[in-house]
Length: 251
Image 1: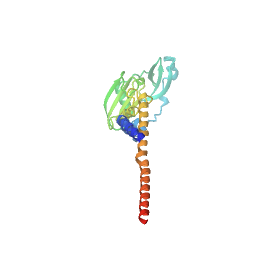
Image 2: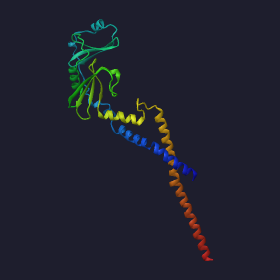
Image 3: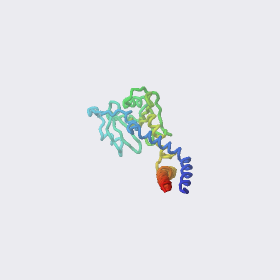
């Protein structure tokens, strides 16, 4: 009985303290499980174009690129719009130049960013807003992508495409369900600064939750299994008393 009283009291106070977090874990966990992770990542927002580069358009050779920008790194040949382009890094800076005539195309203009966004966007909504972000990016965008154009579409879940001002590529895509997922993840791991699952608050809360569960099991044992055992014992005592009473009457 002492263990029962101690478990009941401990369980009550633990659930009073950790019960709200249990609800948060359940709701946030359900949100993250229900939605397909590819949809959350925004993969469906972008069309995967298979662009074919016409080598007859390339009048500016790779050798000319290296002669003009010696020591270039991560050099690649791709396309921007309908023309072939070279993308590369030089002295820590990204560049994009035309493969047709070698003209420098980066940084791209807002009009070019809108054209690129329409080209990549898979939905049918119109562009609602375009914003150039050079510093202080929102939490949903990494600093390494700056500078970028944020192109917002007037469509379901308010999707946004982030177009690099230097490469003309889509570097990130976001919508309201991703933003909701981000909030739910922070609530789930209980790290309200970095969203890191490896934090002391989560560890302590998990241990308290485990202790609450164990004390709950003790209560279940006493309330269900021990009660049934005591009930069977009481029935046996009643049966024995009845048998003694009948024996006395017979005598």
